Amino acid sequence: MRTPPNPAQATVIGMGPVGSLLALELARRGITVDAFERRPDLRAKTISAGRSINLAVSARGIAALQNVALAETVLAEAVTMRGRMMHAVDGTLTFQPYGADPSLCIHSISRGGLNKTLLTAAEATGRVTVRFEARVEACDLAAGSLRVNGEPVAMGEGPLFGTDGSASVLRRALLDDVSGHATEDVLDTAYKELHVAPGPGGTFRMERNALHIWPRGAFMLIALPNFDGSFTVTLFMPSQGLVSFAQLGSPDAVEAFFATHFADVVPLLEDLTGTFFRNPTGQLVTVRCAPWTDQRGRTLLLGDAAHAIVPFFGQGMNAGFEDVALLSDALDAALEGTRGPWTEVLRPFATARKADTDAIAALALENFVEMRDRVADPDVLLQKAVEKQLERTMPGEYLGRYALVSFHRVPYRVALEVGRVSDAILATVCAGKSRLEDVDLAWAQALVRERLGALRGMGEGVPARQKVTTR
Ligand SMILES: Cc1cc2nc3c(=O)[nH]c(=O)nc-3n(C[C@H](O)[C@H](O)[C@H](O)COP(=O)(O)OP(=O)(O)OC[C@H]3O[C@@H](n4cnc5c(N)ncnc54)[C@H](O)[C@@H]3O)c2cc1C
Image 1 (cartoon, rainbow, N blue to C red):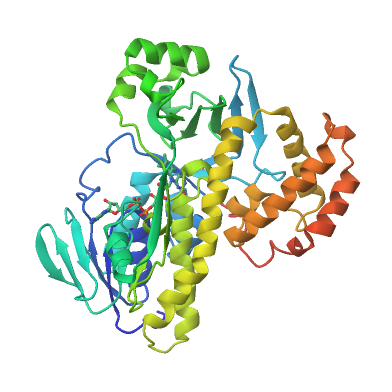
Image 2 (cartoon, rainbow, N blue to C red):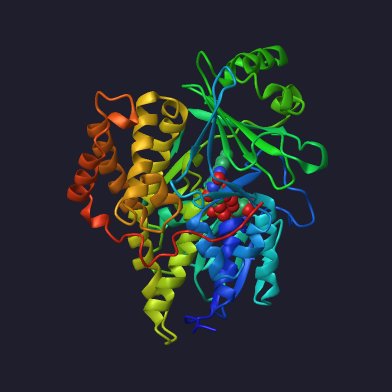
């Protein structure tokens, strides 16, 4: 076991995916963890429908799970997604693989199943105690006390971690303490989850190894496969306006809307109008805040509490898991086998990490526009085709933005910068062209070498591609 910092105790608020992983990671280093979770124990209750039933996990999340020896367990019940399956209005299907190499894929996993696995593993260490149905209402950082379900609770002597999600109570207390600042930008697009039931014998009624997208400009539908053969389908649409959730106030309106825009999936959707009106309409928020630590360097926000992002790159949880993995690396580097204090670690970690979470927030918003408006655009399709050629013909030299974010672990800010330069190169070589064979690939390669030279070897040294087999 690695040397724990001093003191070997920590308090965690929020045992969602990131809090549970953090508690497990800390416990594996010998740290005693006292955790508070406002919801009941989800191993005894079923998770409520309508809030992101499944999630895409990719390289960063998998690497963090590997650190706690749980990647294989989690991926044993995942469904591989090798690319996007585009559904045109007339039902025509077009498959866009994620990479030139078919082993480049992301994995659809159950949010509830993942959370249960992490909680069980954390408790099994014997060092993690979780109080469920324990809502932290306030945090007095100077006094080192919390108010939980109306009662004062003294914190342990170790640090306090806030993994309590995008509406974090600790973030508010922290920012008051340090006169910090936060913005919570609510996207004008909201979401609603629907369901496609499995076929007979747990078969998949659409292509199973794909993330399905019905891009329709101002709105879109997506579907991710579940291990039991079902699909979780999500409608993303403006809250207000001409085509919006506000216009879908009756079963007739919902049926007509789906028949017009998503006719091919309508026969597969289970109880469309019942589910539509039963499930909540969720909001999507980008949280940016600074700092993530208090004056004493004894408090740290992680996951959505520090940096909630819109879900269009499938990176919110992956980024939160990467926080935990990088914090663990920072502990190793700072303590070097000594029992040094936490304060040497938390603030430098938070300062260094923030530039990357700001970058993934920007990437996620950019991908929203791409998925919604641009995936069916012929110019974009040509640029994607050229990008695939570059990835194939320049291994290790050229990696597109999606690959850098999803299949590699280079810092997100590098993926953002490289993506912008790549866009400019692709736009330059594709200008005025409509066919792949008309694009000057040698010119594109020369531009890559000239402008993206720093990329050379970037994929080396990181466990980029997860060699795992899932369903
Ligand atoms: C529609 C949608 C699709 C998504 N798809 C993906 C995807 O494909 N891939 C991906 O990586 N990410 C995805 N995300 C993002 C992902 O859901 C989040 O980034 C992730 O859940 C963050 O985990 P967390 O543990 O930080 O926060 P949360 O999951 O919000 O967990 C916070 C926990 O803290 C508890 N809590 C909150 N307040 C208190 C309190 N005061 N006291 C005690 N406990 C408290 C909550 O009950 C909860 O258990 C998606 C998000 C949405 C909305």
